Image (cartoon, rainbow, N blue to C red):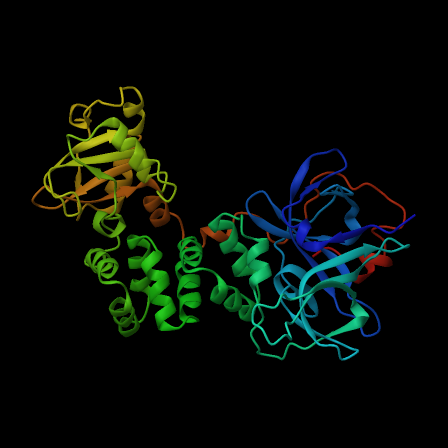
Length: 442
C-alpha cells in the first residue's frame, strides 16, 4: 500500500472534523521541526476554530488527511497557538525560501512542500516542489519546476536576508482582510515585515484597517516613507486619519506631505476633529446624489464592490456641490426603500424626513445612542451651515466602544484545555511515543 502524500499549500483552508462529522475549524498551516540526519518531522497543524482563534492540533490527534479534509480523534486544546523555539511553519516560513542543490547544479526556491505518513503513523516532509533559478542569458527564458527530496537540496537563506513571500501571499489570496490581519500578526516579526513588503498597496491597506492601533503603527513603521504614504492613500480616510494620529507628530506630517494631495486633504480635514466626537468617527466619503437622481442611478452607485456595506445601506441627498462639504443636506434614502420603487423614481421624493442629522461636535456616546434607538446603520453629519460633511457608520461606533484588545478575544480562557468532544482511543496515537512524543497539548 502506497504512503499518503499531501502537499501543504493545498491543505490551507481545508476543513477539520471530529469523528462524528462536526466541523471544528480549518487548516491555516503545518508545523514541523528540523532534524540533523533526516527530513523535518511534522508535529501538528495550526487550525482556525470559530472566533478566529488559531490553535495547535497535535499530529497525534489526526486520524486521517484525505479528500481535502482532516479527521481528528476528537479532542483538541483551544488554548491560543504560540510558536515555540525550533518550530517552523511550512506555509509562513518555508514557502519562498531559497535552496541550493547539493550536486552543484544550481539554486531554486521552494513553492510547495509534500508531507507523507510513515509506517508508524508519523508524518515527515517527503518532497519539495521547487522552481529552479533561470540561468539563461535571455530574461524571457522560462524557469524550470521539479520535485526533489529533502536530501537533494540544502537551504541557503542567510540570517536577516529577505525571504520571498510570493507563495505565502498566493496561498492566502482569498482570505478576508480581517483573517489575513490575524495571520499576519501571528507570524514572526521578520516574516511579517517580509509579507507586508510584498503585499499590494491596496491589500495591505485593507489589512491595516483590521488591526489594532499599536499593530498598525508597528507595521507601518517597518515600511519606508514612500511605501507607507502609498498605503495610506488607499486606506479609508477615517482609518488613515486614526492611524496618522497615533504616529509621532513629525512622521505624521511627513507622510501627509508624501500622500496624494486629494487624499491628504481628506485626512487633514478629519484630523481637525476630536476622536470622541462625530467628526472624529465619521468618514467623509458617503454616497452623495442629487434630488433629481433616479433609483436606478443610486442602485448603480451602491453596487460598487469596493463600497463598504454600511455605506451602501443608504445614499445622501444634497444640493450641489456633491462632494463633502456639500450643499445643504436634504436627507437619506435607504436601500430597502429604493427597492420598493420603480427605477425611474426620483430620489427627492423618497427622502426619509424622520432622520435628523448630527453635528461634528456630537459626543460619541450620543452618536451610539442615536444609532441604537432608531435602528440605523449610519447617521449623517453636518456642519453649522447644514452642509453634509460625512456619515458615522455603526462599525465606526463599534470600533470606538469596544476595548482596544477586542481583536484578541480575551473572553476565551487561555489556560484551560477544552475537549470539544470526548477523546477517541486509537492504537498508536496519543501516547508518549511517536507523534505525541514530540509535543503534547500546546
